Length: 465
Image (cartoon, rainbow, N blue to C red):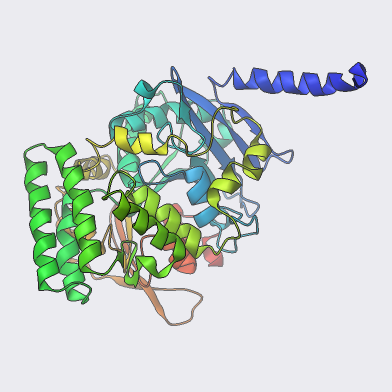
């Protein structure tokens, strides 16, 4: 036995840590000594705990005319971890090897990552009945989290919040956007709302599945036989959605992806110019899917996590990182919680909402005067630009005709004269076409993505692009 007095500090430290784990109902914050990072849990409902992580930018510029913005990043899936994937694989300060990222979005804004919905990443539920079943339930939880974080923090309240989403995260973003706007108006949330940005988002599943066959036929990735099969299943999905058979539509969507993979010799759903089996990791995912006959394992969340891991050329997996040194750094993750262990349950719980459109929520945001930005990667398939343009044309917003009639303006990066994309804006609707990018615009075209972010968030650092 060692000296008992030397064990006292360790005992007290363990006791304080245990106490912190039992008092995570409010936005109890932990962080770095210099205040550049904060993180914590919010109990958004009984037995439902949501994890958040805030980074403050070292490039912050204080300007009375242009307050420094904050970006709330929402990942897709559903079940993809913003704290893990968005942070370490896309826009955070460090990559998965813990090396500085030259294209971090901290150059233009503070970054708030949230593992949403509960059960995603480090977020967890103590009872499976606490998983959300709809996008609106997820929005209610996120609004609760924002109230806990913002209502007691005057510094955050003056920093305009921009909700930026990717993939399925777009459905959470628009429901949250409406919820936030209403909570601010009711005096329940003290927050400056900057707007919503939807990056390659799953806003209208019907329009996306209907776009896949024609798009892949046009780029010679499938032939007429493959297109006929794809179009037939997409039409079946359209009819299922029209009759309210949302769960059945999700199952048909899974089968449609299998048919497209077979007809195209495994096209990459995140970049239709590539094969998904070009990578060993992606090949493993596809092999596993075929073995399981395209079960729940073949979801956007699973594939895109593997895709990004392969692009990062990391020496280790994201799971190892999050359940290893990052968990040790954070110190507050309960012992019985592993990063990502409840992600499949999150997806399954949202199966009946997965194929529901959220076009009306975009309309509502526009009607409320909220800035809405849409951006899409040119070679994305899963949320193809063709499908995005189709759902935008369904908006009932009064400014749509004027928006549609406008000419696009070209975008450049670093004054190199190479067209990086196009943009069109009318009143509070903005659309960016990002050339050369697939599903993950910040990864595929980091320079143009940073320029776009500076413009969207009106960052004081935007002129440094």
